Amino acid sequence: MKIDEEKCVGCGNCVSFCTMGVIRIENGLAVVNEDECVECNTCYRCCESEGLNPTLVRALRKLFAVFRLRYDGRIDVCPTGALTPPELEWPRSLRRAFSDPTVAHDSTGMAGRGTEEIKTNDITGRIGPGEAGVVIDLGRPGTGVFFHEIDRMTRALAPLRVTFEPENPLTALMIDARTGNLRDDILQEKVLSAIIELKVTLGDLRDVLNVVDDVAGTLDTVVSAGVSSRCDSDGGVPHERVCVEAGYSLSPNGKTNLGLGRPVTFGD
Amino acid sequence: MTNTLHRKGTPEALKEDFVVFATPTRSLSPELPAKMKRFTEIVLKHGPVNVAKLENMAMRRVDSRRMHEEMQDQLALTATFDNVEAVAAVIADLKEADLGVPINVSGLLEEIKQCCGKAGLTRHSAEQSLGVFGRTDRLPSREVVEINSMCGHGMVSFNLIKKIIDEIKLDRMTPEQGADLLAKPCECAAFNPTRARKLLETLRQKS
Image 1 (cartoon, rainbow over the protein chains, first blue to last red):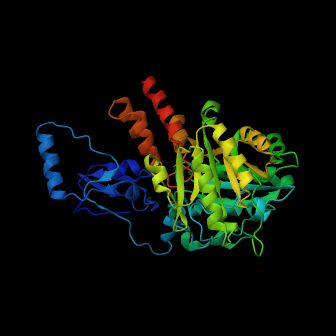
Image 2: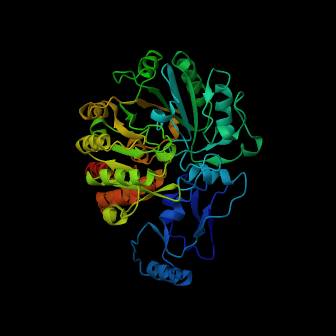
């Protein structure tokens, strides 16, 4: 994010909205730590411009200060429109693709984190009987992650008998899905979060979860993990027993695919 | 699309937290707009507390104060509800509508399973969170994480949540105003303002 220092009046509203907490007020102006900014544009989207004259706003603020008056204005505005999303070039453009849910990924055409999970399993059959889907969301909640940390996780998982989801934007950034190595030119880029998505047999699920747990302990961020499976004919959830026996607790809430989807056929 | 897997909360809070969403990307056909229009009618009929529409292949949150006006001629992708009765009714209507579009519901799995049973459905697949691993010491208080987790993409910053909690404790803002502001960054509309308001109210009373 770019902040025009000619326009900024140091109100600090954008500081609150910054998802990474990397905007600070310095000498009366908002300053972005560019290394840590993930280009999510949340500050820009949420702090709409009031279009006020910066000189006028600064003068009023000084006047208020002299008379010890407090002005409680709206916190979801940028009084002078000082915020501008910059044009991003590769590989920095990845920051926005992974961090701004209003932007689609080039690799998949999907906005958001770009995962399939079980959302379309009733059509694709991606996770079949005897299999588990695993999602490993690095940087979430609210901490962010560099690709070199994601690379450490994908390389640790690749030797296990896993299949990385081919239509996931992270898989598209692997040099080789058999090794899990990510492209070298992206490793220093940071994103709000990114989701490794894979499937594995229920028999191998425990090994995968253990590796996720072990590698997460070596990273300087947080990792939210999830697991899915196709339900039995009575609606039972096959992965529950495996996870509990492996010593992992499962949330009582989650996603349910209702099974209402069906493949589109000619004439449908 | 939404990432509603890791919503945190007490059992009581989760009983008021359900997100219904359609994933039409695998159902492309000339009939899809009409099907999504029907999906939109069904979710709006049952009183969602937050809705996202499709705009330029991405989700955009609709202002909840003008939900029905803003959704004229728009297609909904996500709708958040604060009661299971509404979700049960949505599931029943969707089954009857037979749109052929994949529909998922995030929320308490057992409650949704019962809703499916009442509608004559057997759930197809289920997904659960295993929790948070790694540097959990970098996370703020449970309440802040709980509010943050309601936005699937993590757009509601820890700092904004803390600021709004402070503003409410200082009586500069009501919990309702605070919940509306917190919902703003969440473009996928998975954020549940009812839950947020109740949690902010509890925090105000504690202070």
